[in-house]
Length: 352
Image (cartoon, rainbow, N blue to C red; front, side, top):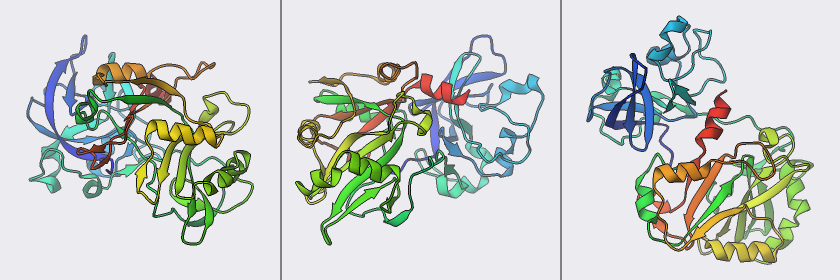
């Protein structure tokens, strides 16, 4: 399921913020945003932009980066800049205003004349021209070889706040919670049509060379491991020096696998199946933080669990990934039941 960077949402709750006269807190779906005082009532509709979305440089969003007096700070939900033109690296971020956590931007639906008749849940990303922020690609990541293999799903996880109903789909099932590493994703697979081995980034197959994808392939003998099970593809996170601030504090570049996919059966291996294969192939897996027989977390406790430090570091960890131990279809996602919870402490640190 594609992430809705911009969507129409209904106000579920409006809450006061202590010692704040000009702003209040609005709850929508699983998210909360700081908005102007009295701008919304429960049941009213608005347009919500998720964190890490890039709004278009149009009049309705221009207040986000137009200079204004510091005393007017409380009238918006995101930081201001000193330029009337949208800064190149501008994106919606998590922040705190008067102690209240604000995650995203929420504006009245009536402000968007082109969206008349839109309903709650409608994806308006394309209609508004909202784009997704992509972190800069680290140097040494290689050159384009071919499109991303069509027989392997691309890596992506939905945030729990975007679809709170995922918690109910998992409730009571055996589950596994793994650590989410902050690096760059990699996919390795064999094309069964021509027996060629591919090392891939998020969106493309990478040309063989002295780049990090192929360095990891050679370091862990991934091609040999996959030729023993040619229908398998592995997906993992490359982390280490020069990649996303190296929050794990590693001295050398490493790979940690989070998915094993069977391209013939068109399914992901169950948690225990994947761990068994990775152990046999001597491939490192992402750390499992917790397993249990009956998932019982709510959103608040899950987001709290997402917070913490990477082992043996002072770095805030990015978050966690939550899945059933046995692969399960999600009605809400229209596919695999799997989602992530990103640490609010990590997001706030990133916004500094």
